[in-house]
Image 1 (cartoon, rainbow, N blue to C red):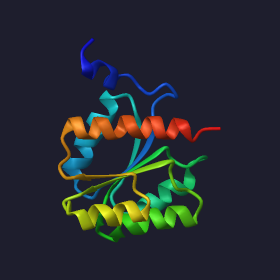
Image 2: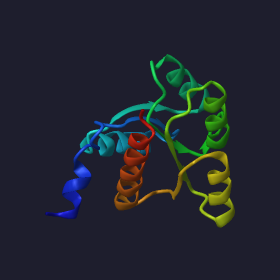
Image 3: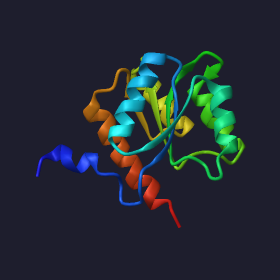
Image 4: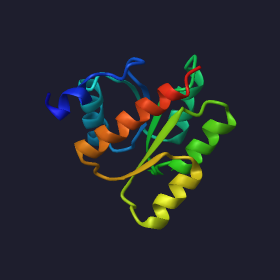
Length: 142
């Protein structure tokens, strides 16, 4: 079996419901195509306030937050904090950032992100993080 074959299959719990927060239009479009090919369901926001609005109208919190850290109206760390305060935090969160120092990664982990990927992430790194998120989200289900 080709190692990429198992990546294309949705996780056993079904496709992840992902909130993608990214202010760059081309990156959002690329993410939409990439996540769609992998079978996930994604909603997209350009900034903190739009993301909070999307999270508020969902019946349940998203399975995964895939979030750029530098947003036009705040940052990803603040967004994750706000989602927690509103009891809308996802089971898993992945930070996407142009900042990749050890201090940046540590700050993301301290804020609750389970992974910190430097932008642009390779498809392999993103697939691996999504697989880990799917397994983590499934493990948190009752």
